[in-house]
Image (cartoon, rainbow, N blue to C red; front, side):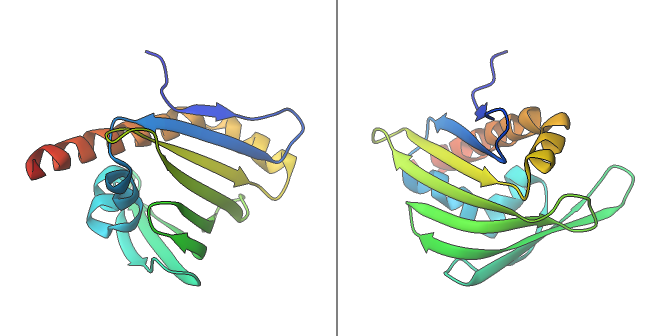
Length: 158
């Protein structure tokens, strides 16, 4: 099965660009990133804090199959509803440093939209280490869950 989420990682660079087109209205996709109840559904995580504003922050907690809790957090640097979110992202207690994420939301038609994520890592080595994990498979699965969760939500409101 073809991955609908595209990950572009240029050799020797410390960033990557992730793009995905969704069969969803732009406003609905944006909600998947800002409404705690929806975030929890597609990420399979608990939202401890989510302040959607400039200088806001977030903290998520997830539990792995062995019962270990993992915290993810960051600061929101720019927040423009239905357009963009600029934030940091950090997984606590891991060898990965803080990354900077630029999320841009673009309407393609009334019922389709595109998400572009530009992710900058502290170093080329750190980015390459992330790509050795099942990262691209994981982001594609997460985006598939967004599509599924929001499609159900959309059908409930129609």
